[in-house]
Amino acid sequence: LIKKNTEGGGEAPRRRVVLIDEIDKAPRDFPNSLLNVLDRMRFWVDEVEPRQHHAADLRPVVIITSNAERQLPDPFLRRVVFHHIDFPDAAGLARIVAAHFPPDAVGEGLAARAVERFVALRDALPDWQKRPATGELLVWVRVLTRALGADAPGAVEDAPLHALPCLQALVKTRRDLERLRQTA
Image (cartoon, rainbow, N blue to C red; front, side, top):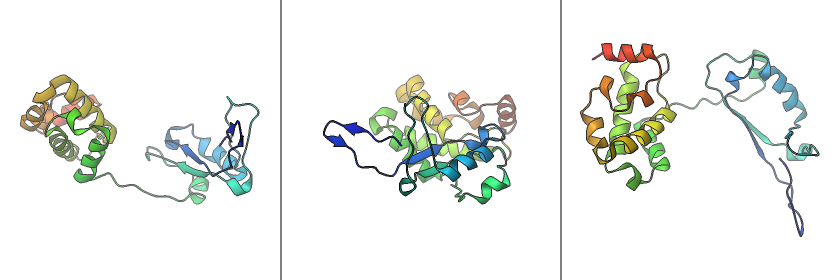
């Protein structure tokens, strides 16, 4: 949002992107307060003086994310375009893992086995209190690599779901862990 000046003159103004992540975790009145800011299309950074804003022809693209943990107010929902992103399938998860870990970093076969077991784990309980998400998968792959090294692929493939190595990286509540053990 801030135009950078260079020695030979200024950089031409260009459209920017504003990301407001996980709005559903903000205080209850935040979405409605945000409507006022979006109406005026003035954004500022407190750490930068003087405060700057863009003219109407340089309106930023505003992307707001939500995990749907709480219903957002109707006035807010009426004024936004909603786009639901489905949870990735196994192939999509494999691409995500590959984008975060070079093949030589995760060992041969670990990425594919980890994704396969992760999908099975997510499907093991119909009503997770905190269903493992993509972030947990990435942390799990990192932890497996560091903790088990070359043994990780076999350990992941051979273990029952309730006894997967480094399970703590995936299952975040005692209730989910106990219910997972009961399915064994």
